[in-house]
Image (cartoon, rainbow, N blue to C red; front, side, top):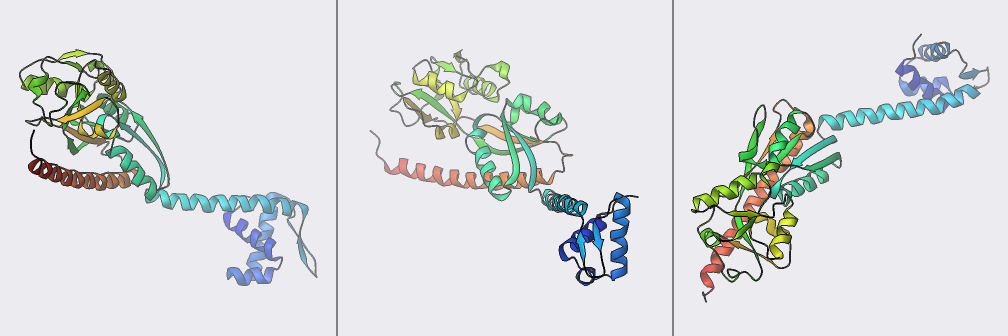
Length: 319
């Protein structure tokens, strides 16, 4: 004979009250069916749990031990039910994120922060990886969502959505001859050495840097290849070359390095996110909503910044 969940609930109630009549009233059932359920439980276990006399009822030694275990079981069942409801609403679970490039400086960290405030029970793992590697990682279930450069996403069997465009700026040593120019022409860097991430890492910035330089009429001299933005900034600070990086990298404060916008502006990097269309996880759905909210906010802040910068340049006399 198997033990029923209802029998466990009835047993705990009787063990707490030690009065069948009161328990029957509390559970809104007749006393005979209640007594029958307890006897069936004892028969299923093959032990006496409750000792009944004409004057009182009490737990046996087996009943006391069984009560503690059953309480834990009922508590775990309750917790499981609560977690199941939270999971259905995307408020519990595990989300794994892949990211590359400028998404690491605003979109991803801000989205994760907002998401954690909204769903504190979600465990989040973030992995830095090249955009070119994220597609296969998503399809193989290693990550649920990836952030990277649109042109480098392999969109096969994936939903790929552009979320924003990040303009490129020149990263120069502080003592560079062009450091006192508020804006520079990319062609002025034709004789410079460019520090860049290696192509073998399938970094979207590599192809984009070559493309904009070719559009400007020259092929850049490449040296000191590194996939770490911090390392690129370090090489530039040491005077070993210049770099083209997304504007959002300015959030990384680094001494001996300056950032200058281009005039005319360069084609920016299209940042995108990707996920499997068949992934119906509520957790992912909630995170996608948060990302969109963050992107809208960042875009609004960028527009305000651009207007303020343009106004400042208009009122500031040139030297």
